[in-house]
Amino acid sequence: LEELEETNARLEKVEAKNETLEEMLLEKLKKSSEREKQMQKQIDELKQELHDSKMVEMLLSNYTDGFDRLRSLLNNFNGNIDYSGKTS
Image (cartoon, rainbow, N blue to C red):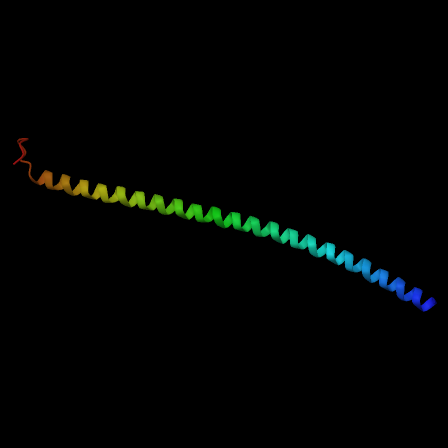
């Protein structure tokens, strides 16, 4: 009977330890899930920033192309001006 009581006491300790470990594991899982959500949010924000920067780059490229065409037109126009103020 005494051996049975000792075994039962050890079993209760193991069960208590098991419950504690389960709680710790659940807490770590919860924190991991929260971290994963935060990381996904950061990834989404970085993707948006990348998209925005590509849009800005495209707009700047369009403006640069437009200014280059305008400069070319002005240079051609200036080449056709006599300095009396009349165009040829």
